[in-house]
Amino acid sequence: MNGADVLCDVLLANDVNVCFANPGTSEMHFVAALDRKPEMRCVLGLFEGVVTGAADGYARMTDRPAATLLHTGPGLANGLANIHNARRARVPMINIVGDHASYHLPLDAPLTSDIESLAAPMSNWVRRIAGPADVAPSAQAAVRASLTPPGIATLILPADAAWGGAGPVPSARAVPAPPPAFDMDVVRKIAEAVRASHGRVGMVLRGRAARQDALEIAGRISAALDVRLFSEVLVARMQRGRGRVAPTRIPYPIDAARALLADIDVLILVGAKEPVAFFAYPGKPGRLVCEGCEVMTLAKHGEDLEAALAALGDELGIKPLQPVSVATAFPDEPTPRGTLTDDAIAVSVARKLPENAIVCDEAVTSARRYFALSAFAAPHDYMMGTGGSIGGGIPMAIGAAIACPGRKVINLEADGSGMYTVQGLWTQAREKLDVVTIVFSNRTYAILHAEMRNVGVNAIGENARRMLDLDQPTLDWVSLASGMGVEAARADTCERFEALLDSALSRPGPFLIEAVV
Image 1 (cartoon, helix red, strand yellow):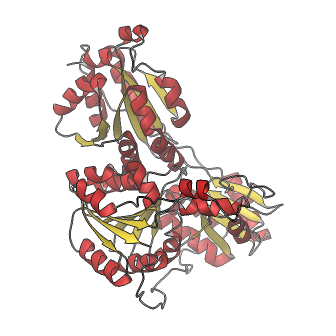
Image 2 (cartoon, rainbow, N blue to C red):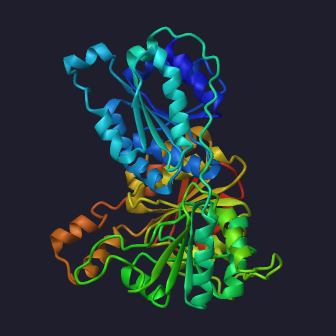
Image 3 (cartoon, one colour):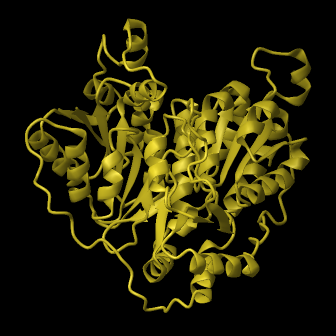
């Protein structure tokens, strides 16, 4: 038994049984060890951003870490953008980064780099394995770190620690620390603030506070005391659809967000942080709440958010049978016809969404209307990229599909964002994943056109246009998908889009619709 075998054993003993990988020479002993462990599912990504984004999607749907396998510092660097998104989603993840043998590092071979410094900004825990005898304790510590919020653990595996002889591990199970309890004194203070500011209180729900049971408790508080419910701008995961309480998403544009929160005097955070503007704009504030708004934290991420909401409800005297407001029927809206538009796609997807589906939304500007309509769709899970780094949608759908076999995954994808990790379509084909990718093909970075206007530039010239538009040549998503083994078709009318969507939803396996808008 070598160190690589021990690492596999510790991972499997802790129910880490999926490894998203893009290995290199330094990781070959670990690859060989994985080959001896058929209970570990190994999924190849053709780019490290696919690997880390898939681990993010997997963790969001299971609340458990997957392992990633990355090749030295440059491989880690290629995956950092989606590790950043995962860190902002506050999900568990164990990144295993191979490195040169310890005695080879002083030679400064071409792939030598400072892995610790690369990993630190996007990780909550980083450790280099000291040798074969250190593999087991380091791996157990990585598991504990991943399950201790916020949860991104990076474990550096030198090649000689992987190939060196190691004895069996007596007990490979890692026991994480229990979650901290919420503070009842805080609960009582928030209850007083809710009573004192009736009708001018908001509550931002995130993480496990955005799951069905916790949403129902928040809904009872909302109905009884006129508390408005919100989600953050970027949703890590929320259970949506008919029969569920539906918070309003705080919009991305700063003026719209400030207008939404303008009459909130008390803002209660449940697993969330105070909402702020994504960027600074000349003459505009960074905070979204009005001046004088009291921001209060009921419970932090990692605490028992559902229990904290229940305690607040009890303190406010909310009855268990208090009626809640939920969506029951789709709005009376005409069926879209003719030229395909962003809104028409949002309406069609919301109407046709299968029950228990998973929606991964990286359509950025194009699918903004979908979230509001999703309250009326069949019950489903909804996720977005959370760190603002694009290229997470296709990989996130991979991870969600592997985490939840038997559930249809719908990826709402922007064409510009999708090109960052288009290699993920190959992984979907290879793994035969039940993912429908809908590409909003507007051939532009539409959000950047809006940002130019936000900073006061209302007319752009040729240089700016060439940096913001995806033309000359236009992207051919049908050819891109087909070349990676995913069946695909193009739609430019509502009728054609609906026919393709019906077909894609009626059968298993990956399918891509290029929606020309």
